[in-house]
Length: 259
Image (cartoon, rainbow, N blue to C red; front, side):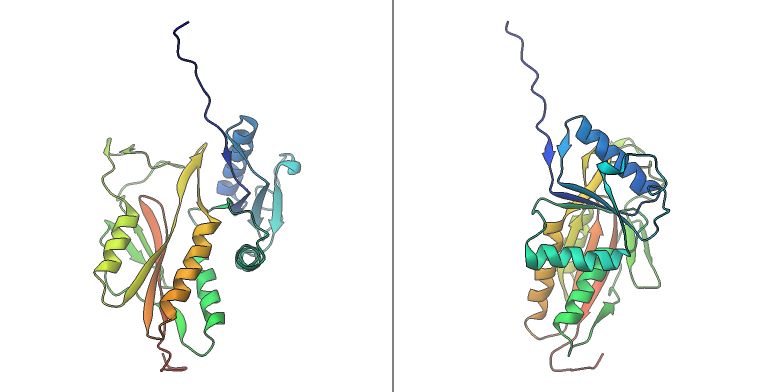
């Protein structure tokens, strides 16, 4: 007929999808992912939603619980078990992803910190201070020393997927947070990394980073500390526009027990 045939995109294929939090964001992400699966846009082995409150918004939902599993557990406790299974037991599919909430603590950094503290019990392993500004328009340090950064000095649309043209300024998005952190480490006197968990849009307004990125980050921290010298590993959970950044300080092997 001469007409080009429309070929649908093959579905994205995931192992586990882990959603952090069962509140308003987690409920939205769960609904979107179930709808995407029903529409043939993705497949997955398990859809897990982690929240310590059984009466969270998703727990009160009328959705068919057969479509997902609500894991009632503290986030840190869950990831200690789940990521150990992924790293050491190979019981987590390699194509599994984590869907973060915009308002959650810096959970993947906290997991790397606990792993490093267990790996080097005779060295000082703690959260350090970033030595200088990263240089984004919005930049603030929380009491726990997490640096929150953003290229937006405006209110972003809810569930923005960070397209090439920013929907607020109506102009090309010329920035990329990963590049800013690479530059920050390159100009630093004492930093290693960066170890980055990059949240990218997957489908139906839901962004995620891979479990493989987290495991690779743990290996990078191990390599950074293997030389025995003091080092700060820069760790960021980021998107194109926003991020949470920490300095994981590993003290020198010769300074046992000293800050």
